[in-house]
Length: 383
Image (cartoon, rainbow, N blue to C red; front, side):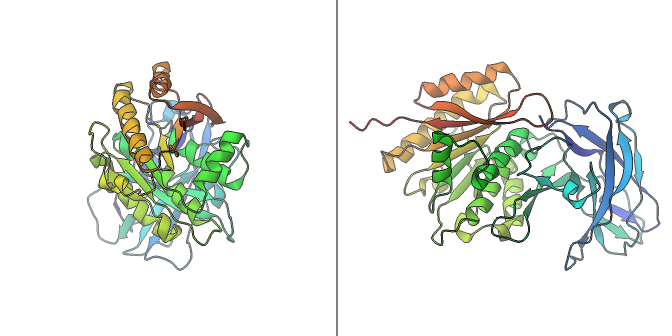
């Protein structure tokens, strides 16, 4: 389980240049915000200039804001505004658990991923000389780093989440855990079994068509898009289609687009609707003219009532893919964190349609249930 710094009371969308502090209420909790961090944790703040966009990052030195305790979790904390803010500028407030720039970014290649609460950035705050009515922000941002492979500096991408209770608009543990494992798989620092080697060879081949189910904010597809863009092969190709319900698509597409410069043109993720209760296969999926190489899923098990629909969808996708390439069933990669033991009935249901899952890794986090990485395969009768 991971812990996340966030805002119980977020900052406003606009603030005046009067020198008055900005009131926020930090929170440290799990992904669902149902379990709170039990230790004492120092939280540091800094400011990052958002617009006008600087030629190089302008980020103030982190300063201790408070020592967070669950016993005082509802306490409002005053944050001094950026000292040199000017009329018309927008700044993001950064909260982190350390005093370095690295502490403000979530490194997916960190072997101690989750040993400290994850940092958070507010939406931009517009500073003006004119007084304004305080309107609370409804979004946050987190920054993620991939190791510097064939580059001088790490690759950093950003994801927006909503502060509402919409489950498809938040980052979940399994997305981060699976994303981290994929980064380490690409870097060659995971346990190398025959199955893991097969997954790596397929995912990072010069051509690989990938379909994601239950994408949410898009972290897994975006990580895959960036990683495939780092391949040495000049002929790298293959589509990444990432899917969810209609309610998730605007934020999903926004996150994909905001990181556009980090993908190779051939590997830009495409967001589309795929409703597990609908029998039709979307047009974008049917465009996989060579079939589907890999199906990826993270945190799709929280609602056991949806399992029949999920299994039906997997069955239809596999049948579609094998109708195109009969000897090549897709690999299935699942990021999973147990919330209820009943969720593991999915494995039995998958066996009934010929999918055999094998656990290949665990990403432990801070405490509690780890993120498990499972790979599903199907045997092919060549007789």
